[in-house]
Length: 225
Image: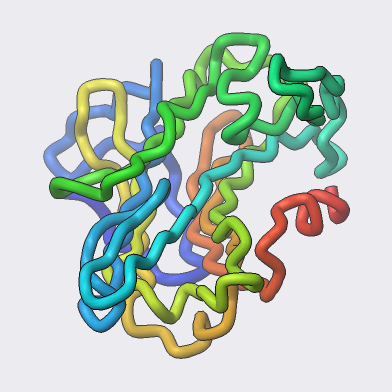
């Protein structure tokens, strides 16, 4: 049975589950889920969400991972490239995994892609990490969620329900889950440090963070690292 975490709680990912079986950490999936409140049209999560009613409402929420070294910094900020349409993309193939650079150059952590409909149950977006294969220089991975142009569109986390982040092992067994529903402190907030995994005493630990921010630009959060 998975552990339901509260804000700030930490678990050891290498400890056995309650049945005595060990978790398969050859890969760990960080799954994110979200529902738009019915008053805002119903519908899904991370990606472009569409509501009903007289006016169509679009939400674009993004999942991001910062890969941090022992100093708590993003050591490799990647490079800047120019896309065929002429737009420039920064942080490409560096230690930030996001919608414009969805797979780390090591091949050991990647974003599965935006869910643009929010249909169905379970995870709406996933970041997969091969913990046992990560380079030793990667000491911590911080998972961020941000609402694209949330300030401009007057959108915030108070407009969504059933927000969660969970860790699932390589066999599909849920290890831990952190829910954010019903917390008024997230009203007006457009980005969040959601959770992190980090090395400690030869093991990997998972911590529920739940630290909200008013900015809708994850680059503002990246400045800290």
